[in-house]
View 1 (spheres, rainbow, N blue to C red):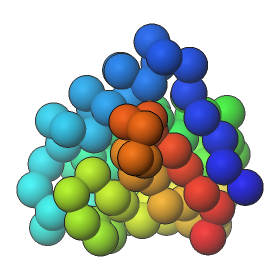
View 2 (view 1 turned 45 degrees about the vertical axis):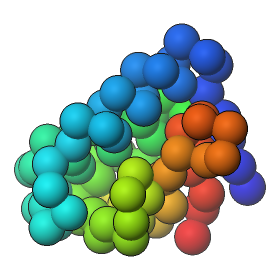
View 3 (view 1 turned 180 degrees about the vertical axis):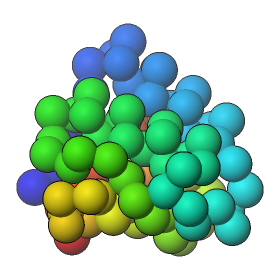
Length: 86
């Protein structure tokens, strides 16, 4: 399942992802985890709070939520922030 943001929200979410912390930030309290929590929420997906992050590449993250959900959050080829349930 894929969800997409509106253009304005997409720009905001992309800015959040692009200004995140280094790839080693796996702590749920990191700025990257907080940005991913906001992004997933803006996409309307259930999460609660991101508790851990595994960075898979540039602007490609695997987020684990406090409710047990996991999402791949990334910028797709069209430049939109997208989340896929894992």
